[in-house]
Length: 159
Image (cartoon, rainbow, N blue to C red; front, side, top):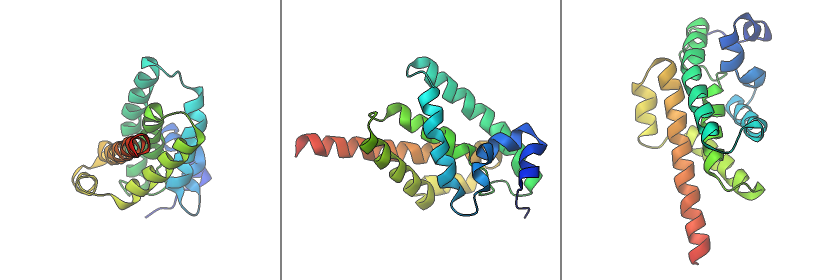
């Protein structure tokens, strides 16, 4: 397994994006650092249907970025590839109440579900290969986090 370097990051545009503009090169918890990159990107995005279309386009591009980078690293879902976390968390932020507390809880829940991979996330992570597989399991983790947040909001308003 090749550990990516700054040189690898700059060798191909797909590497640059798949490695989250360099955030995936973090020695510890690259997925967490990659997820953090989504915050400033989200603030630059329109909060309307165009924003969702941009996220969809970033997902499609991510399939390509992760496919190329995984092949070049020799590991289909290398831990340094964090574009999947960035895009999935962008999607989650789109649906979360824009407040510091909800963003923090969304971040924690997303990271927990992405790491824990409850059913069916673990199943799809094992079965789906290539760039699509890399991207898809994180979308499921974002969905789990969103459903959990909606449940918490419901509890807060009813008790």
